Length: 196
Length: 196
Image 1 (cartoon, chains in turn brown, red):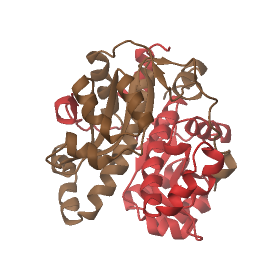
Image 2: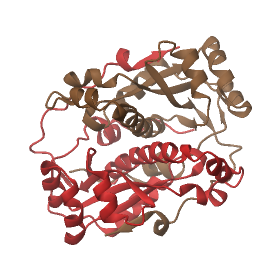
Image 3: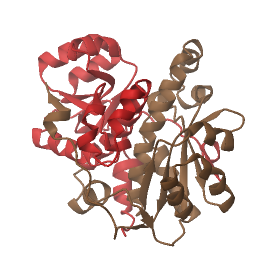
Image 4: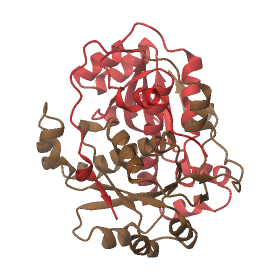
């Protein structure tokens, strides 16, 4: 059995963490990004399928490839961020299931229910994005997640073979919290929770 | 700027945490479940929409209502767990956007693009499930997430008005790790990550 983490840790992961607008001019090391993936991959997924794929966009050329798919405001943030991770899902994720989940023939299940491939992949890749955001904060990084981008354009630019499909993106770096707006409101417990 | 959390914390959240098969016969207090929701609601979501809804199934009656929608193995686990949280999404989540995201008329955006309501709600509720799983571990709880249940049957039993829709469930409690099978394999970095 484990014990509750201290208040300062809950603050770093949840209460004090914010979607930052700006990052310090400090690179994020490859070692840190490798550890970030190593943390994320330990999180549970349906059938242990781990359908999320991650493209760490670091170079000037790759940022330029991503920029046209973004709104003006997000483009500015991505070009200024040390690294932006493109979170995608593998449309053929189920092919690895005989190795990842050997106890049950889940590959055949998806082969015979192809309509479930996309819904299962996107919901589990979104679940893994939750792990990614908190793992990044655990490593001392700040995160600026963004949705609403032109995923078709990102797919054409990054995944021309059509196998990986973009879900959303998140910029990562060492955050500057000096110009943050007030936190947006959250739903009260009685709006979102029932006890039965 | 924040610093990386210590190795013991990363172990509690990721490396050593496991989907448990059994829980100790110890109740999970209402105070802990309230704090769990309070942590989860701080996590970022698209348009700050927080579309996930949570039903904490604690009573014998509510467990009996949930049981017929589960496979035999999951039924046994849910009936034995102190509490199981049903994670749902609100099909009218966008109605709260004028309050939750006052800077942009996101409600009209969804009203005029109704096909995006479900995809946005399910992906963001799945993202919030990632926060839930790690927040539970941060509070010293163990988690047994389950997908593949009969969501139509759960919806009929718990949400007869059709507004909230079931995504998946997770049992929560103080875990017993004595009979865990070996951890299932994870994808290597070069199978799931690109650096560009």
